Length: 139
Image 1 (cartoon, rainbow, N blue to C red):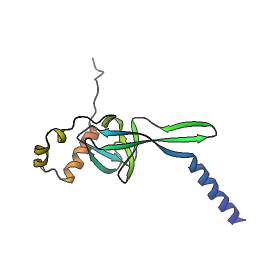
Image 2 (tube, rainbow, N blue to C red):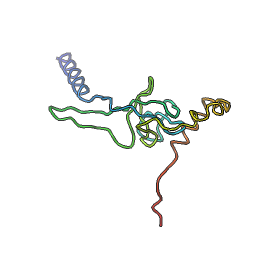
Image 3 (spheres, one colour):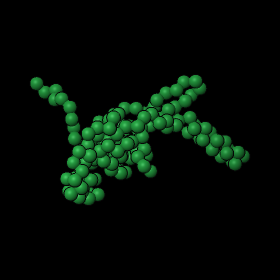
Image 4 (cartoon, rainbow, N blue to C red):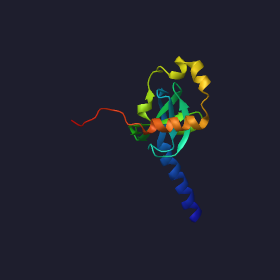
């Protein structure tokens, strides 16, 4: 009896998780000098990796299919992304639909001569995460 219940619960859980899936939405590019891939959709969550300007990022949307209706579950200011072997979240402000002008592309000799270490790249990406941009509402 216990085995039958356990097996039915396993099938039920696999069928529920099979309804929610990640679908490739588009490919976007990093537009800030360095950006972070986060574990959760928050700028205070753990960092998984750092990427440079112009790096292509696969943006996914989480789709729930119940019967004939399809519903997008996650598509706000944070995008569900895949960068290399990492699945995580990136802020939409740091992504662009077209590959833009990057400092390291415009000035490659200068950028290479600076010799930025991995730790410095991480902290530059962390700095760009903390920036708040936009118009002030104060009169």
